[in-house]
Length: 468
Ligand code: CS2
Image (tube, rainbow, N blue to C red; front, side, top):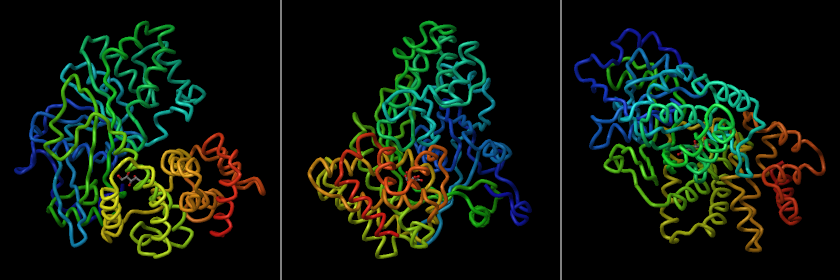
């Protein structure tokens, strides 16, 4: 976030005490990961639900503690700048009743002890779940090991990783006898509820050996791990956004959120302690979110990653610039043709979805930087691009479009295009620079066994050469 400009400090700051400001709703939801996406998505749905006055969020920061410092002086209020192709619609969102730094752990535990707190949502990026590709908790992670030691000594000790933060909150709830609760992850991972449950239950079993006997069994019985597909393209805030928000509302807001008009939320869970009527704000509640997750991860997020690495090699910096480049647009269409063959949905539905994506990407007023999307590729590619590679190869085809996405990532790892910002990419960077066997080595890191397929290695190597 940017600092407040001189122009905006001159105005009245957004606050609950202002005549038209929405009152703070009672806290019944807790969120971990107080970033722009949460504020454009889950907080927006909550503010627009028919029972909005009954449901407020207490939101804790994730990796950016300053998000709470900026929002606290404006009582959790912020302006959502919905960027339509022909202008902004600005609205003040009132569902975030409290903001806290992640370090306010005692406050977090206190909230989880309240029976009326019904749902914990999370947006902390793919890497936060600490569940490895083999489906088990990454027990070798240093921060997790430190959290495990801390929890074994004291279940209320401060912890930093997501599985430990969730488990600590659930342990506090159990100790208080506050009853069942839902954990609802909102990150771009397939079956994100199952991933979160694995992390929490495996950690609980490790903690159980000492301080927390019975904890894993309690979690198993009382915690509903719901799954969701979330979608709304939300760039980082710029100084221009700060100015635009002030102009639109006449109030100073140091933390407005720019976003696109489109939004989608598909969720599946039992919600034993209740939830806001999110469907009244447009969310879709289903028995199984998987087909929606797959469609979104493969088509939207997959093409985003392809553009982040591929279009940046051609000097493009935003998604809108990239999709206006006929070469990049052709790459996206080719990759989509491959992915769509394996999505269990009617062809017309996929055609409509693709054309909506092209419109969304082309919105010139959403400045979505390729560099923002490029981060964390080592965890993104396996869930976005690799499924299409595998499905196409299993069908005996050679998927050039998906292979090109991996090839573009190889160039990214070698230092071309968008800069590498990916704590998990060290091995992949070394692999990408390892000479003749580099493509095979990168493929092996994306998924064990991919290198057994000589044709696939050849195909990706060919695309690496073509992109050079
Ligand atoms: C993007 C997503 O940064 C990325 O990896 O692909 O954040 C994308 O913009 C959202 O999932 C859209 O809903």
